[in-house]
Every structure is written in C-alpha cells, then in structure tokens.
Image (cartoon, rainbow, N blue to C red):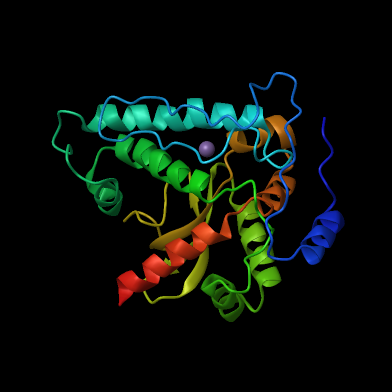
Length: 253
Ligand code: MN3
C-alpha cells in the first residue's frame, strides 16, 4: 500500500512549485498496461458517447490509482452512459441535448436523473483532472482572483470545498459553480444529481466537480475520504476550470 503524502509535505511542494508544470512520475504498478497509453473509449449505441480521456489510467498516480481509474471509467461511467442511451433511443426524449435533459429532469423518468446525471457528472470530472496539476491555480488565471474575492483566499476556498466534500453524507458530489447572479458558490448534491438539475436546491453552471462516491476512492483510500479530497487538489486542471469560468461568465453577458 502506497503511503499518502502528509498534508504538510503536500503544501511544502505547493509552496515551492511555481507555475511550471510538474514532471510526471512514471507508473510502477505491476499489473499496469503500457504506461502513457490513453485507454480506448467504450463504444455506446446511442447519441451519448464516452469521452476519450486526455491521460492514461496511470497518469494520476499516486493520487488516483490506475485500477480505480479503470473501473471508474470503464464500468461505472460507461454503465451510466449505456443506461442513458437505452432510456432515450427511439423514445420521446431522443434528440434532446444532455444539458436540456438535466434542466428539466423533474419531468423525465428517474433513469434520466440517475444515469443522465452520472454520465454528465463523470464527463466533467475527467475533464477537471490532469497529471500536470500544481495544486493551485496560476495567478494569471481569472479564476484565481475570483476565488480570492469570493472566499478570501485560495487556501480558504480549498478548506471550504474540502469540508463540503467531507460532509456530504453517503454518495454524491461536491461542486464549484457560477450561480445565476454570477457568484462563485460551493455546493454538494446527493447521488448523481448536479447543479444543472431543476430538482436541486442550489443551481448554477458547474465549473469543478468532485465525485465522493466510495467507488471513486475505496480501493486506495478505504474510508479516508479526506485523504482522497486532498489528493484531488493535486490533480485539478485549473486551466480547464478557467475555460469553464470564462464561458459561464460570458454566457451571462
Ligand atoms: Mn463515480
């Protein structure tokens, strides 16, 4: 069992690193397929295809282990995608976009909420991750200043987001969203709900998503959700959060 780096060590690394990308650590898992190989996206019968990952299953080690990544992508996510496709193909919901399905999810069968939500949420989750994470957004990004303005500092944002992720009871997600008033807000949802849905209390445009289902971390972290959340902060792609922040801000104008 690999040791999780202590919080102190993590923040020493953060403090010492500039905006340059960190060097990638080669994968050493014995059962690993060749390192650096991006997995094939499982094929779907229907409009909602699996996204191709931008990295291999090993690329996020030691923070997210390859076996968990593989099961999570090929079994859990692909399962949601398959069930979503089966629910829409040849039926009255065929042709609707994923975002439209989410926005009026209360009018649709539960399979759209559960599996459509699962499909959407994981699409975003994988895009939010990178092997080149620095642990914080570079100062040149607008999101860095926006997080300071909304939460006091990046550190305070990290603490508040981590606390929200820790306190979501059972399975669910933690989110950073841009709400209808253009404010950055931290929220959580149960199961596969997300902030686009008309069934959740706090709605907005998702910028950053963290899966806190046990299937996301149990193999490596067992019950230690807090360690998993700390590891998540090592692999966040802040450039992607920035892109989503800019698009969401523009969409409000
Ligand atoms: Mn999941």
